[in-house]
Image 1 (tube, rainbow, N blue to C red):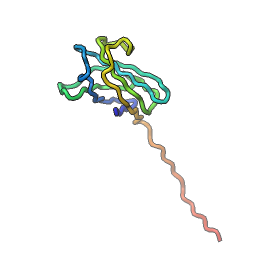
Image 2: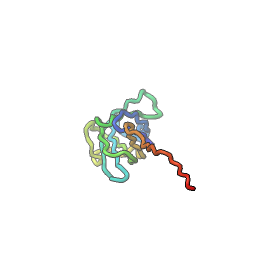
Image 3: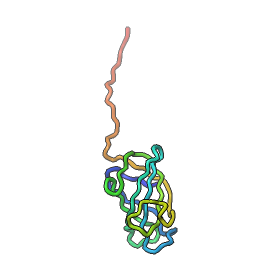
Image 4: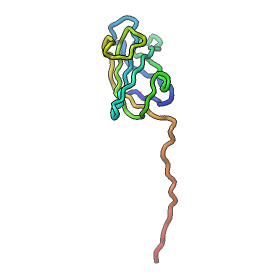
Length: 122
């Protein structure tokens, strides 16, 4: 599961090259919120340092994608030739799918301060 910081920068570690079939691919990311079904798209560059075991992408919320909701998403990653296409139907195929959790790191936890009172009845 990918953990994504809302309003922040997140390093996404996935394994897309093992199913990639085209030369010099660009990767289209699709995020679908599991409750609202709102869909977000972005094309990210692979910034891996030559390690064949995994691929690394940098996602900046507010720049690459503007997530409206925290919570759980289904993600799909597509291979494609185009560096700008955001339509999965025009890509060259799905290379990975999974779940992501978008967490709002700027929100303080809910804390309630309730005074303790003891009553003695006679």
